[in-house]
Image 1 (tube, helix red, strand yellow):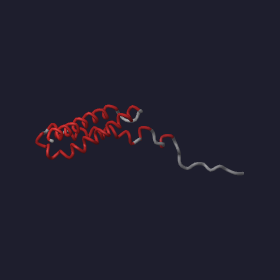
Image 2 (spheres, rainbow, N blue to C red; image 1 turned 180 degrees about the horizontal axis):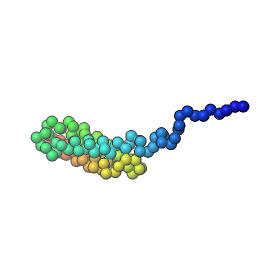
Image 3 (tube, rainbow, N blue to C red; image 1 turned 135 degrees about the vertical axis):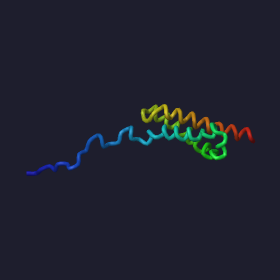
Length: 105
């Protein structure tokens, strides 16, 4: 007489990763934070020299991550509003720095 072993650990569908567990969920909020922090130099001119490197790097990353977040949100992963706001803020700060460098040269 053979017996089948009973599983000791329960396996359920809740332990499997879902679409909401994807790292793409963080693209929108990350773009939002980077975009908003990079626009500080636009709102506070006294901090322009201090925030210039952050504005260049954060604006470009906010724009890029926001566009990727919009793509993922269209596929059903992540939130669209955070991606759009991050993209707009990143584009505003990065575009402003780009325009400033072009006008100086």
